[in-house]
Amino acid sequence: MKSKKGLKKELTFLDVFCLATGAMISSGLFVLPGIAHAKVGPVLFISYFFAGLLALTGVFSQAELVSAMPKSGGAYFFVTRSLGPAVGTIQGLLTWFSLILKAAFALVGITAFAQLILPQLTESMSVIPWVGMLLGVFFTFLNLKGVKKAGRAQVCLVFFLMGALLIYVVNGVKFIKIENFTPFAPYGFESIFVIAGFIFVSYGGLLKVASIAEEVKRAEKVVPQAMIASLIVVTLFYSLVVFVTTGILGSGQLDGSLTPLSISAEVSMGKWGMILLSLAAIASFFTTANAGIMAASRYPLALSRDKLLPKFLSKLHSEYQTPVISILLSGAVLIVCLFLKLDMLVELASSVLILTFLFSHLSVIILRESKIQNYQPTFRSPMYPWIQIIGTVFFLFILFEMSTQVFFVKIVLIAVAFIIYWFYGRLRTEQKSALLHIIARLTAKELVTGRLEEELKEIIQERDEIIKDRFDHMIEDCNVIDIDKKITVDQLFEIVSEKIAQQTACSKEIVELALLKREREGTTAINHDVAIPHVIVDGKNLFGIVLVRCRQGIIFNEEYQEINAVFILYGSKDERAYHLRALSAIAQIVSNSLFNEIWLHAKNEQALRDAILLGKRTRVSFKKGKYF
Image (cartoon, rainbow, N blue to C red; front, side):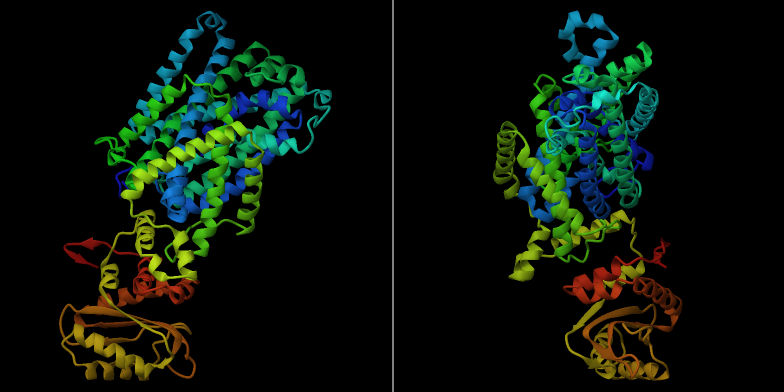
């Protein structure tokens, strides 16, 4: 199936799980442990585990946001809708650049492992960048062929990768030396948290999942499940593998090594083990580069859709429906980055990832507190808002502990992104944010329009694959009455009968009498909140509905005195069959335990319509020129 914007929904749970896992298990495991161990000591495996716990807080927020808005651009899309286009532009461009840097770093990392397998390459190091360039071109064109083909390659590589690591852990446990864990924390236990920030780039694969959510089947369920499952598996693998490697090698061999797992595998399994782990490392770099281009290219696409970047970046390939210009641009920048020194930029990529998770926490808080009716995630972060508050505090602490050099580079990148927004995007976009809705609750309602609610409604309709039927079209065109004082059922029918008379050939008096007669025969209240009065009118092929909301409650009789939602149905005799269908649709919608809360808090007439249009119910198809 194609989404509204043309991207194909092809990825399954396995594809998404492998995309995230393959993107995470790469340089963060095969290269960084040696560098990080020199800074923190044997306690490194706890840093990896702590970083995983921090990432889990971010994943909960990301999963909620993805389930509500499964769109290309991932975190950029969420941040723009919650914090505004200026912050969204900065976050989107920084994340795009950091994903490309991580992919480029993966291709450069192949050099060290290739030398272990083929030492003769040492004499011709000048050819290595060309190897990275060729691989960059290969993965760029692989992504042009479609996300499914790239996803299949990812699944194969990830299964090989996880199998190799499992063999390594099982064989390596027997060679662990307890003395290699002393002193356990030579730089103090506070270094655990500092190094957790340094290695946080290891969990960057999670960003890539959110960015391709629009191309996932049943993304609102699949993406949260796959993200959480992948993070748990990867955190356990990271902690176990780093623990085993530390126990085998010790500080003497581990500190500063760029191939720690391969060296450790040679100790525990011999030459074949070294070759196996080197091939696994190369496979992991392949998955990172592949997933990096796939995910990074969706950021310019999303920015372009919102008119924050030029329109041509959102162009899709006529056959494969992939963002061709955005993929080519991302691939070109990746190839250029192969010639950069990336040591310091690893820390920069980590800081951008931390910023993204921090923004995700803030986005969840803002979207929930803005009380936007059409923000309807299918997955809700547990322990809200404590997960978001704790995650934000720790992320801020880690950011301030990072090096001064990274801080200044980050400021420059933020300034460049803001300039792009100020001189290009600001002049073209009409994007509104949820933050304005919070401000409007405290000040003037004129600050906000219904643009964000309308966009969220369209996203839900696309996400839930809602195809409009006759009932939907009837709700879109019906009369809506919003009453702000307590009234009786007689007063209600007097108001409503005038609206129905305008839509039919019947007089106001006849409609009112018919409604009163039907009510006296037996109450139409179906519970203490909802009533569904109905009346037969003269004519043919005539059926309609009037929606009524009364916050103070309508008195129907002694038992039902606070009815808030009234659905008044009117139709000709030949529409009796559809009358039953409409009753069934209403019954399904109001059976939702949250319906009355949504109904009472709806801000305007359109919000009342949306409460019905987005309600969960069975829809019927359009056949032979008529809605059934």
